[in-house]
Image 1 (cartoon, rainbow, N blue to C red):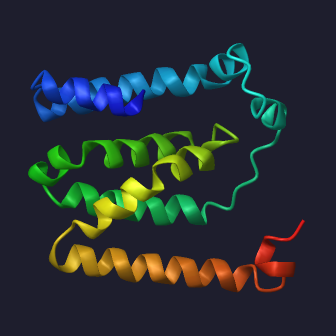
Image 2: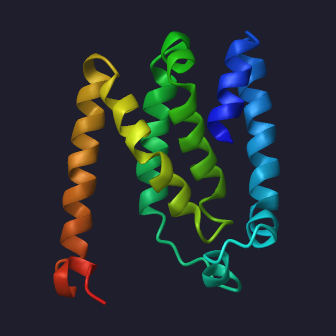
Length: 153
């Protein structure tokens, strides 16, 4: 659906500000109705999250916000070319504290977001790679006391 919205707004040649506004409205509506729609279509995974408390540290939010700010600082042409990954990241950031399965949103578009980060130029690309490597190392460090680095049951 997100790819369809991005494609449609690109084909209609909306100005960037109107495109961002339309995508934001669609994403806010989607986030508001996500749990209702998922349970309505019978997504069994939604049962895992019903009544779940949102227990997040905020480290991921800070990291991905910095990545998003790098995307925004890359200019209008970059954003036009990479609207889908940037909007996926914006959707994730917007639902981080309110939707218990926000990480799944990020995981669904992570490949596109990483490719978008590698498409940046100059210091932004270097900053993105440095931040990514530090984030990965930090994640492994915090999970080093877990069996199989947190992957064991």
